[in-house]
Amino acid sequence: MQRYVIGQATFELVAGDIVVQQVDAIVNAANTTLRPGGGVSGAIHRAAGAELAAACAVVGACETGAACITPGYRLAARYVIHAVGPRYTGRERDAALLCAAYRASLHLADAHGLQSVAFPSISTGIFGYPLDAAARLALTTIAEALALPTSVRLVRMVLWDAETRRAYEYAAEKAGFTATAG
Ligand code: AR6
Image (tube, rainbow, N blue to C red; front, side, top):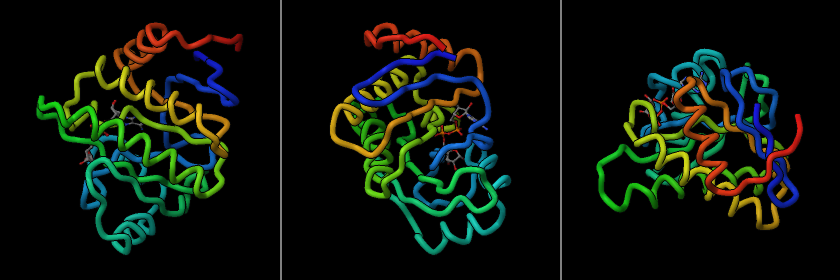
């Protein structure tokens, strides 16, 4: 595990499964329909139970680059923030949409007074976003959001595989994040 200090918050890179994280909210890498999918979305919906899909159906839809929030039901986390990252196209707009999905998630967390949020690596699985570029954008967007006034004191990126973990650790080093012990 790598731990960094950003403003008044702690930022962590950890290996593991986002479904079991004991935080106020876990972020789901969703699609615009908010229907359960594969990847991290499938895992979150399986663990939360059918009520999560029902709550998503009530919300209805979410645009790419936006996020919405539901209860976490059977999860340890009180809320699920459903963030819709872009499907990678290679166009310039992809980056702005990926940053917007992280920003919208942290904005929602702050609006609900949440202190701890766990993210997966949005868009780098089924949506095909190149890992190094996505890691760099995720970290800079999170750092920018944590530099503003916010209720959020802990952001944890929960990284499922070794390649993803290495990409985020490298991006943190390149971004000049300050590592702390622990
Ligand atoms: N915990 C943490 N990370 C995970 C887990 C887990 N349990 N399972 C997978 N990952 P993806 P996307 C990682 O494909 O690219 C869905 O069908 C995975 O290894 O879940 O944003 C949605 O409904 C990868 O590093 O999300 C959408 O249609 C990262 O999570 C679409 O896929 C994201 O991979 C979204 O695609």
